[in-house]
Length: 239
Image (cartoon, rainbow, N blue to C red; front, side, top):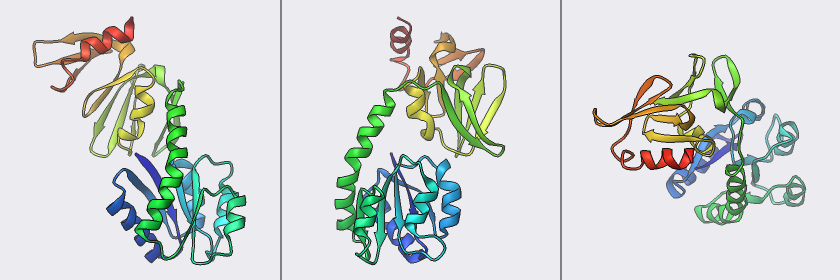
C-alpha cells in the first residue's frame, strides 16, 4: 500500500484529490489531508508517508516553506498549483512532479506512473534490510521497541497490541497492516488475520483443538488457511 498526505489550504482541492485517489487508485491510501500547513508540519514527520501532494501558494506557509521545515525527509514530493510559474523552483526542491489545477484523473495517473517506480524501488530495498527496532506511536508518545522483545502482535479493530517478553503490552491506534511488512522481514509470521507471531518464541504447535500455537506461554489460534504451511514455515526458519 502506497501512503500519501495532501496539503492544500482550499478544502475543495483536498476533497478533489481524495476523491480522485479513492475512485481511481485503490492501492493508494490517503493517510491524512491538511488545510493548515502549520499543522501539517507538526504531524507529517510521524505519518510514514510515501508521497506528499503539496499546494504551493498558501497563506500561512508556502509549499516551499513547508518543505524547508520538514527537511530532511524521505518521501517523494508532488507540487500542486494553479500557476505554472513555479516549475523550475519546484524541481530545485526535488519535486518528482508538478500538477496544475484543476487536476484531472488522467493528469494524476500520468503523475503516479512517473513517481511510483522510484517509490517501489525504495520499498524493495528497505524491505531487504534487517531492522532492530520498530517505531510505535501511542498516547504516551513515540516508542522504539526492540524487535527481539516482541513475542506477538494482536489486531483488534483499528488498534494493534504489542506483547513483550517482559509481560508488558503496548497499544497503538494503528492497524497491524502498518507494521506487517517490517515484522515479516524480521522473523515474524502472520498466522491469523488478528495475530502476527515472533517465530523465535514458538514453543509448540497444538493440533487437537482445530489448530493453535503456543508463543511464550500464550495460546494463539492458527487460521484455517495457514494450518497446512505453519510446520514448513517453522522448519525453514529454524534450519
